[in-house]
Length: 480
Image (tube, rainbow, N blue to C red; front, side, top):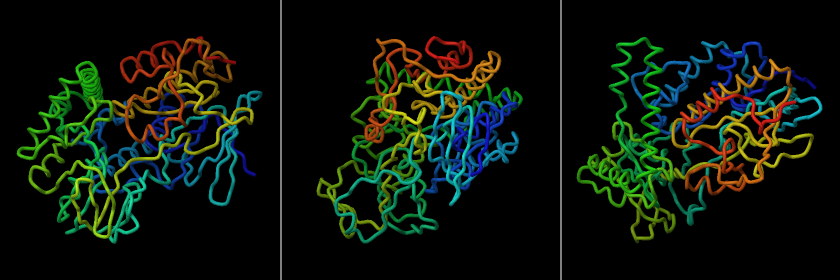
């Protein structure tokens, strides 16, 4: 059986995995690494999802990498533009030959005697073995196999087509069709305005509303800065500006929830014209208790205002032959039902992880600095912010990993592991969002601690200090 020896094995070739590799090329070129990707192409989310209009709901100056400028004039990019950006990064940093496709990691075991990981991967009918000192989990947080589909009563009776956006049929014809989109999150907010260009009728059905804000897709300040500064300097300034705006907005929502709620609803009503914001854009929770949705150039508001789409806030009683019956008594007859009902969370990409052949209990672990897990040696997991762009945190994680690797080399150390020494630390929920997809799997995921360094900041400036400036050496991190 073939065995490959490496310094670092990166699992996943999405935004985090490609970013981690680029950082290694920039900061740790002496390290021997490979990327294993279970699918046949890079991109993760941005190559997996094919539904109409798929795009980032974070601006690309912060969703893109810190080391690679975003040159497209659009702030909110579609999936093809994001994939193009990723492929450019792969080419620029010469990591194409470091990626192995169609290779799924099945298990990973850390041996404390050798301070090395043994990783078993499946490539077709062949089993591959990788031996490495460090493991980077860049697998994201959800299952690529299937999305979350509720057990809708009467679904088997519906004569039309039922689709989950994670499994969008190739060449689906919806011109002139009547469509229902179930959901109120970013996917539904994206699909409705795009599909409304061709459908006869499209209706978004939501059980409860979400906060949605209209943001211009062309950042005039960014365009101005690009004219007077070099690309690199402009990128840094725009990125800093957008990070600051995100943090201020989030902080205001948390400090003055009632005021911000009122302003957001008034803003939605202004965009909607005669279409009522209440109850459809008036959530029963505080701003940022769940993730905030972005409508670039107010596209969702526009199609509602112009009558190209409709929104219903109601509960589903049952599916039937011709469509959906709602608890209010209304019947919605449609040809296509799209269940934009969220994701199934999955840790480690589904790989079985163990230490000295003892299965690692993910649910009992606590996050360290938001990038390691207590009692799990020589591993770093890449996760983004819930209240800002994913890449802001994964970029900082890569920067910290680079510093950590250099520290180990300087001091001739082979391993590290976070250890919870403080018995006063209490365990709290990992993510600060009150969303259904989080609650469904919360019991399977790690927790955060009540005090630093076990507590998540969800603040780029604080994380910048912790991960890029503060010493790697820490009483909570054991080296050997």
